[in-house]
Length: 481
Image 1 (cartoon, helix red, strand yellow):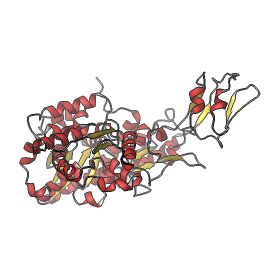
Image 2 (tube, one colour; image 1 turned 30 degrees about the vertical axis):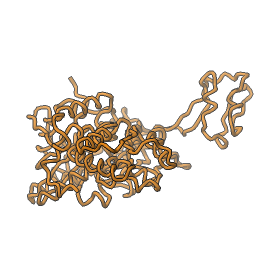
Image 3 (cartoon, rainbow, N blue to C red; image 1 turned 90 degrees about the vertical axis):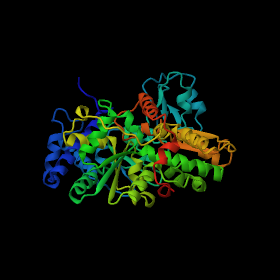
Image 4 (tube, helix red, strand yellow; image 1 turned 180 degrees about the vertical axis):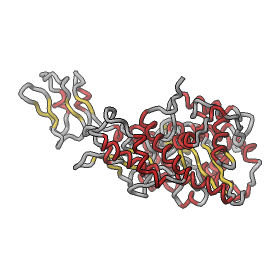
């Protein structure tokens, strides 16, 4: 049976570029063979999706640059490959051939800007210079003849950070709004929007750890339990060590630490928003600056456990492996760069395995036993709130009435923050997850789906006998403040 490692063929194409770049990086001849990489990846002349194979090669050259960590703008990790972004129709409401030229003309009646007129056959025409894309005409059309042709990337971006270039029509990202969540990356059907890779950086860290004797730690996000479905989690862990990592540690242990600290901070301050999702925190910084003082001052689980590793282990380096493109941006921020050396996604981890011909399904299992159930369920929506509530119970906190609001996706985050801004939110703790479903819905996962939540919960139950206090009791308390 053929193993399906990815949701989409776009992901598979991205993976093939990453794998090829990684193979040459391991061999140390990447710069010598850059010109050869497109030859093995470009489809034949009869399989090309573009006007010609030459354009395919030009697009692949751009993909290779991004796979090597190069980009046009260092302020963001999400990149538009302009030359690949030319297949989508311009967005907005359009009248289709389904229009029957009816007598009712309800579309005309509801249009607030007088943007609808009719041709000689009484079929509707929308004047784009007047249309405000309110959608009222589409809602009242009895034939559903008016449709919204929003570009997939614009539809995926719930914060309005993507628009179309008025001259060339390609997607444009407004970095002053973008939170690097990667929703557009996953939804673009041509792979014209992608996240910059630091896979070469990680390969260099592995090589140096072997030559210089540094201890390279892999911190894995708990959502890893829902990925690599063709192998067991313990085999994935063994595969990571086989790549050259000294040790594999659960980011969920960092989540246990954060749950403990954040619960105490919430009791002290009375109102708090979580700091675990970097895209959510970035969204507050950019769109709700008056709420910035209420963002938890604690590190994210990634940074928290990485900080502990570096403060307790001499000559340690840390790579975070997870589902999140926004982590690639977080790691460049002052609060994180001291503690985390690089970030790769699960997509990139798969490319690393295959670039070294490591068949993880054939390996023995290595167990992970760092975190509690509550630290592990941070990976799915609602897990953080459950963990904070559990930490309060373990502290014996009985006077504080915890009233969390769980925000599943950036639209729900926006709604809660809007109410909090005007002090009309009936909650004292906002759990904000930019991706729908939580981290299991991140742009860098191999597969999306409902089963991911079940897998994370199952993974968490393996540590159900361990409390948050138990998980962090083995740590040096002076190093986790």
